[in-house]
Every structure is written in structure tokens, then in C-alpha cells.
Length: 287
Image 1 (tube, rainbow, N blue to C red):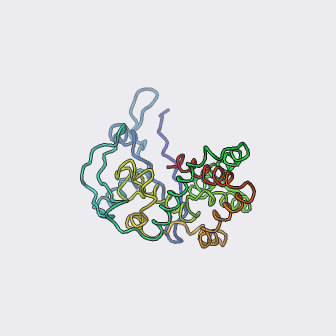
Image 2: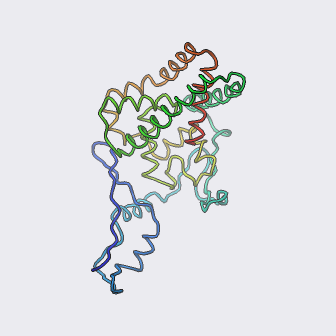
Image 3: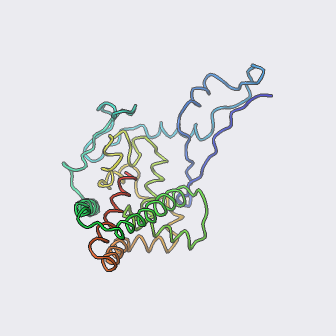
């Protein structure tokens, strides 16, 4: 009996009504095996009828050819060699000008101001510590970071790994909105583009642009995302739901309301430890 390698299961991501993207299998040892081996039988004989190259892998190869052209954005062009990222095999081919040498739009300015102000407020943490405030920080970290971002935004909404009752789906998604990582439509769209163009020039936070850009700097360069991927057209499943459109339109009001509530319940210590401490920890974990 021949031992035949199974093809990776294709995962369909919700996109525009007329287009569904297939998550490509990333190139690995399968590509090497496919060139030299067709099948390995238990008796040591070769079975030429078996297929090792999956359709998603072929799609990845075709896609990489289509996207191999030079992409210019934020004042830099792919193609140069800036060396490898420390402790990795990734060669940096572009150094984007994120902080200096470009014009910041209003969204980038607002994002930068929020991140900077939150980390400045963290300096008050040692002077405002009390155990109730610490417990609030721990609670918000779990609720907004683990339940909101990891469980809801990432696994449930972006990847559709499982289904939830709508009321529970919306509850977890609202928790994610309080993590200040962006509203669900924006976060999910970016993450789906990341998997569609993973580790390529069109990846929204590509490692080809360096360690710092792929981990944190891309948050402050929305123009780069638009130039790489265009306007979001891969989240029609969320855009047709009034709840997510409401969160998108009123996004800024919800973290502000949480901050006011924390201050009313526990004063400045609750604000620093609950809002700022939890927020900073989530960003450090997700960056």
C-alpha cells in the first residue's frame, strides 16, 4: 500500500461578494519533496501516481509571480539589500521612512498620540499602585487582550475558526474594540491581507521592511497599507452587519467611555493601572 502525502486543507477567507481568497500554503519542505519524490511505498517502491504538490501551494507560486514587481511606498523601494534581521534568515529589502521624511495623515497622528500618551502615563504606575487597581489591570488584560483580540478578532472574525452565537460574538468583539488595536473591520481586513500576502512585498507588516516596521512601526503608516493592498475589500462579511459598522463609526467613543468609567470607580489609580497598564501590556504582547 502506498503511503501518500495528504494535501493541506484549503481555508477560505470571506472577501468581496465576487471573490474568495484561498489561504496559500507557505513554501516548506513540500516544495523540495515535490521535485524529487512522487510517492513512497512501504515496500520501498516509487508510485508515480501520487501527488505531493497541493493546489494552494501552486496558487502561492502563481501569486508570488504576479506580485514580484517593485512596490514603492513611503519614500522607499523594494529590491535593495539591507542585510538580515538579527537572529533570523530574513533579508531586509526596504527601509521605510515611517517617522521622519514623510507627511503624517490624521489617522497616523491620532494613533501616535494615543500610544505615546498611554506609555507616558505608565510612568505613574509605581506611584499609584494598589491591589484593586492591579486586579482591574489584570482583568482588562484578559478581557480585552485574550478574549477580545486573540479569541474574537483573530480566531473568530479573521480566520473564522469557530462559530459563536451572535450575541456572544458581538460581546467578544466589543471587548476587542476596547483594546485600542482598531475597530473590528479594520483589524480583520489587515490581518486577512497579511495572510494573503504573507512575508511578501505586499504584506501589511512585512518582515522584508525590517524588524521594527513588522512589529510596531506599521501601525503609524496607513498610507503604506493602502498602497500595498488597496482599499479593504475582504471584509464584506463584517461590513454587512450593522453592529460592526456602528463600532467603526463610533470607535473612538468606546475607549473614552471606558476611561471615564474607570476614573469614576477608582480614581487615577484605576485609570493608570486599568486603562493604561492593561493597554500597554496588550500592545507589548501583540507587537
